[in-house]
Length: 464
Image (cartoon, rainbow, N blue to C red):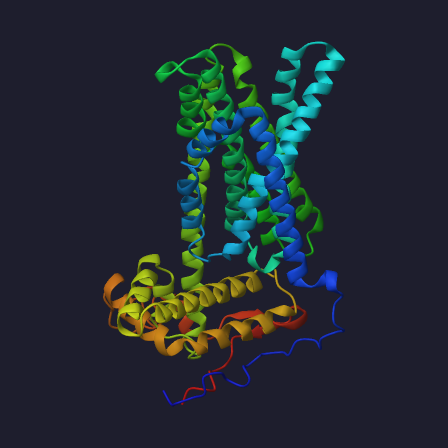
């Protein structure tokens, strides 16, 4: 490989973006919008903590806060693990959690309290009003408030919201924040009841509430809202022309989330063992099904990376072992460790992590182009991603090759195809790293501006 500039001046197929327009007004600037959003969430959090403290007292608030935080790291880690293939920006997850814990929780507390009091006044039946509020009002209000965070990320962070996993992660983190605040309220109220009645130990209401909400069902709220996230994820993965389906998928997910939430809240009215029956017959199977779906989707994403990046091998943009290495989470981790040890510590590991992220985005971009889900922006985005890969190649390529030697099966020598062309048994290059055979038979077709077919770049012009 000849020495080449760090940043190629022009990439094949790269189309310059449109000229910039006039400077936006001050309220249209990104810093102003982020500042206003952060201020809104902070004020919501302060008002919410004040309302919770009025109901639970200072001591109850602190006890509820200490107990409610216990499941949060585990849930966040689970959703972050699911998002490791193409990790989204942390700011999206921070916003989702803050929205669920502050804005959505405040809307739910105010709206649920108002609706329950109105029903109790209209029917003169406080007990019945509580049951109606928990079964009918709360699911609609709470799921709508949580879905607003998913909608905002879907609309304003569209580049980071491209498929099913993104919807599941954003929805799950939002619901985790909401459940955190709700658990503070319930646990703090239970602690205040025990203090008033003088009950301590295992028979206390606090222990029972902790067991039901934190031990048995910490995944309840994430499970409901994830269904909404799946609807938005399906909408993100559809072609732009299918407008009706792109609207019906999120709406259907939201309605299903409300229904499952209503079933869970109404389980206590099904008799003495209604809660346990709903938990065993519905919640546990639903949790297992969604867990399987999440793991299957993650494996499908890794397979997509291996298949789509293979087309860039013969052009020189990626090395022959990179598609399989980037399609293995173990190999990616080993590559970062190798760079940290031999190429300059954390900055080198960060460069490899960025290379992995850009390569993953490139694979998914090409996959969406194959399905007809991109437009004229495809060529521009492809050029940007190839540029970012080229900047980091000197550290990332040797690290990924070393990781492939450790984590992947040993190379297989090529042998002639029985019909006299290509290589046998599904390997196009004979390297044995899982490169699809079709990669050796010419460049797959993608989509260029206005949806016209366009092949991969014929060859990297910066290689000699």
